[in-house]
Image 1 (cartoon, helix red, strand yellow):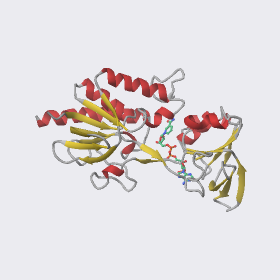
Image 2 (image 1 turned 45 degrees about the vertical axis):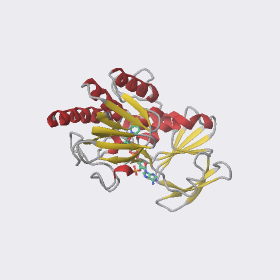
Image 3 (image 1 turned 30 degrees about the vertical axis):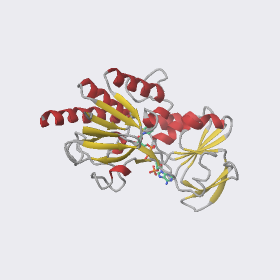
Image 4 (image 1 turned 180 degrees about the vertical axis):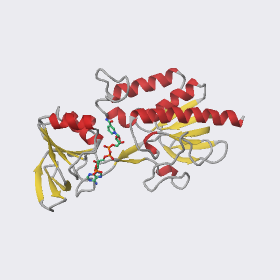
Amino acid sequence: MEHIYDTIIIGGGPAGLSAGLYASRSRMDTLIIERAEFGGQVATTNEIDNYPGSIENCTGATLSKRMKQQAEEFGTQFAREEVVEVELEGDIKVIKCKDKTYKTKTIIIASGAFPRLSGFKNETELRGKGVSYCATCDADFFEDLDIAVLGGGDSAISEAIYLSKFGKTVTVIHRRSELRAAKSLQEKAFKNPKIKFVWDTIVEEAKGKEMLESLVLKNVKTGELSELKVEGCFVFVGYLPISELYKGKITMNERGDVITDENMKTNIPGVYAAGDIRVKLLRQVITASADGAIAATHAEHYIENKS
Ligand code: NAP
């Protein structure tokens, strides 16, 4: 007989793992499908200091490992596969992966977001050759070298602080003269002797034959161009939702963020969205986890009301 899950969660970051935990605790037959590492973006975040209880050098990798273990202990099943197509309508939904097709009564979409490109010349050409989007993955390569960080949000500033443990200097390049990051992060960065700031500035071009050698900077107020010699450039200019699969099937905003109600319901019965993929103001581990818990609880109610 074909297997029909109670819920399939697409994405194994904090939203997906929390949904898995709550669904399995309710004895729902639960599967999480993840195409890459479980833990999502947070797994590559060095220090987590704003998730309640995450003290004593709690890294993103440790936190996500514990989240997965906890969900597993309650019975969540896991699959490492890439979803290529979804059929969301009807009582039984279909999820097609490259090698296998799954059926389920409910779906929780928790596939998160990916780093946005800044758009400067040679950004993609020098990606992996000095241009990076993940400090935890690549910081080691820049031991005692000069590093630039682009952006002024929480990601840019927390990763600049982390990168200062490796680099000789870290220059934060921000397009305005005020940071968007949390004040506590700003204070930490301003106090750090290795971190410098270049305000009202964008990167026009990355230069380098084999590897990054310098960045061409443009002051957005004066138009003045300058060159900054750096071996590393970490880009943190925001994230975009991983929602391509659902375009035309689910209601989204113009960026592609999935629109839900406060119970994480999308416009399609039995389909929920949780975490960074949905329209929301605060994108944090704690809000992603809360979304996952709410989505799983309402998925359970949905199945109960159907039977
Ligand atoms: P974000 O908050 O959207 O910030 C993006 C930054 O990049 C902004 O400073 C923005 O400038 C700048 N920017 C955007 N497009 C640019 C471009 N084309 N060229 C140059 N600069 C550009 O993104 P994020 O920092 O990645 O954070 C995403 C979400 O994750 C947020 O909700 C954040 O709170 C959360 N997060 C939290 C933590 C934490 O709590 N420790 C850590 C990481 C991320 P403007 O300021 O001028 O718009």
